[in-house]
Image (tube, rainbow, N blue to C red; front, side, top):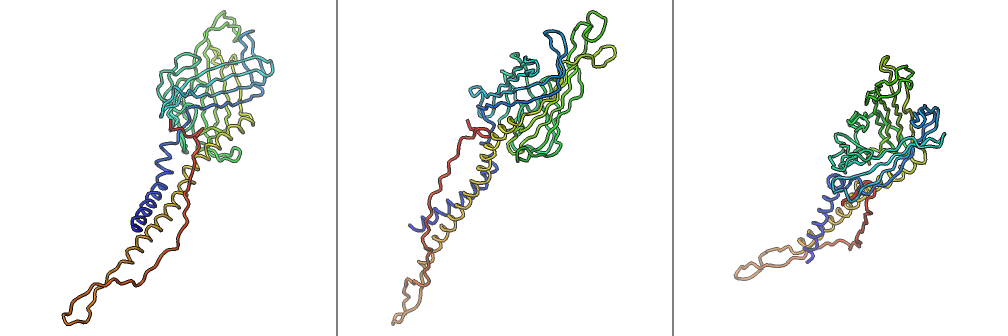
Length: 354
């Protein structure tokens, strides 16, 4: 019976050691995913901004703007491999107390890589709008120091998001990624010539768009912790090809309170990743090693106590007699090994196995 117990402990120890090895690599990679039921808001502010007020046909500048972004996951539309998130953005003029811009967006992405995937419900401003070919909102879990394709909804294509160094956000070491889009024609608008300082009644004016994105990304979770986006939209004089009317120009920077809130959510995800990739492997490895040592010791002890020795005794017939020899018995002191119970909380930001 002791031999059976020893073999069982040794087997259990071997299993736990192997499990400790594969947990932080293969197993964690299978169960750690972006959540289906995400919900977060972020606020960005801009000073000295300008925009075109279509209501009275004038350009307002300088003004202070506030942009609020809200992300809400569509749990019912998601799957084990795909998340569907809805984004609502609202830009407000704090100086003149009026709304400037509203935009809605629905997109789907791979829950491990962050890359956009085809989805029949993709939309922009409540109109069908396919979005594929790059990252859409988050970076991959375990992001690398490399260039990633980033889908730009204004250009309707992906642009390079380039790794450009490291920084620290509230104590978390981050990778810095930058997207630079130079002035690029995105449309042609028919507008009164007077808006561009021209005498022509109506002109076909090119609309150009440019943006400078800076993302500070947690390399472990793939979450952007701090954002700076400088966007410019303008109409150009078709004759001189020079900027004639600013439609929107704002250097939006995440507010300290938003950064603090996002970092708090990110820390929860980092702790859960650390539990899967470091803490639990150490516990399982240590328990496995103890079980293997104790089990092996029991097996060797039992084997040593039943060794047989054969020798010759006196007698006229010179017969051989088997005798049980009990030399050299040793034992291990009893070990009080309590069971280890580890409870895993549901992964709210970085893991959701549903």
